[in-house]
Length: 150
Image (cartoon, rainbow, N blue to C red; front, side):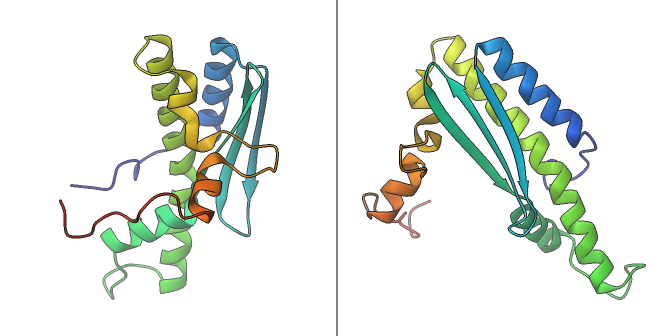
């Protein structure tokens, strides 16, 4: 099975789709950002006073792509070019991944499957600027997953 989103081409148009989706849902603010040093895409939006921050790592996606498409002598480019290509694929894919995830979460909220807070709990921004997930992780409130269980 190939890595999902490895053939994505939408990139920036996915960002426009995200904006349209959250605006139609009633969100009042929207801010996309790219952190080039960290290789991340970050999206912030506000819904009824709740600030949400969702991020995805282009570098993380690139690492997964390289695992599935390792460099070899049969690749018609240098190793550096191959790694650069992986990062470019990641920079495109993360926009599409975020578009689909946000659309799915908002659809779950619209159809009553989840409340807004349940859908975005980990991504809700606290007054300190950290997300709920960041706070929970920093305080060790969740046990690490059991590696032995499927």
